[in-house]
Length: 250
Ligand SMILES: Nc1ncnc2c1ncn2[C@@H]1O[C@H](COP(=O)(O)OP(=O)(O)OP(=O)(O)O)[C@@H](O)[C@H]1O
Figure 1 (tube, helix red, strand yellow):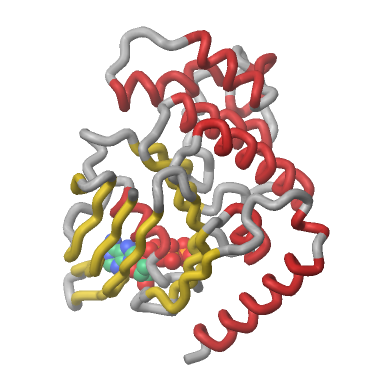
Figure 2: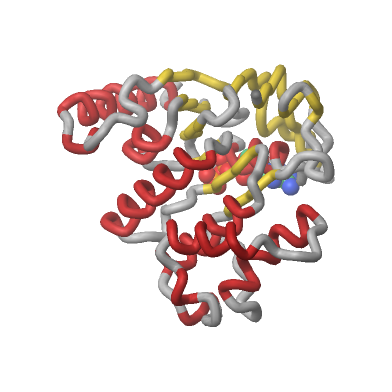
């Protein structure tokens, strides 16, 4: 269980103290997914940085399975917007580098690596460099790296936003099929309402700054088959857009 209790984050600049997030309360069950939507500057990246252990100066409690979040004790996978691949390392090196760094493993579980590469359709790309593969393939490589780590928590910052609409939908399906197998607790930030409905069991809407939770929606459509084609999908999208318009104009 991921538990966030009364989380407030302030930045101190030379002239002022700026509150980026205020009194965030959220619980995500083990193996659940949560999509966070919010206007620019409301603190979405700040939230991910707290969860990734990059920001440690905050008020409130953030726990994974009852223990205060700490990337040295828990495995936390983070997929940044630009996928975070090292351009001077091959695809294979990029995939197992994360595991070596995070879990201090000297040896690589090649059998598992092979299974994940197959699931993601990147078996043929191992010797290439990130600059020699497409954006969708780079996204697959970053997913392989994250899932090989078997994270206690997977964080994704606008994971598919750099992809064209068709590849984005394809990658959302790829993500879901792997996530179903490994049941990794996942928090993703997105600015696409449809992506939030497709990938989020919970959908969290943040208010403009300071970011507060304005809604938490338990998504009734999550995990359904072919939901993108269903009228309920469009209806939920419309009602979330209306909520956002109301909440963000306050
Ligand atoms: N190091 C910092 N010092 C001072 N203020 C900061 C710092 N980092 C972020 N902020 C401010 O905190 C607020 C939240 O920033 P954050 O990057 O978390 O927003 P965001 O929701 O991810 O934005 P976007 O959608 O535009 O990426 C913003 O107003 C930003 O200007």
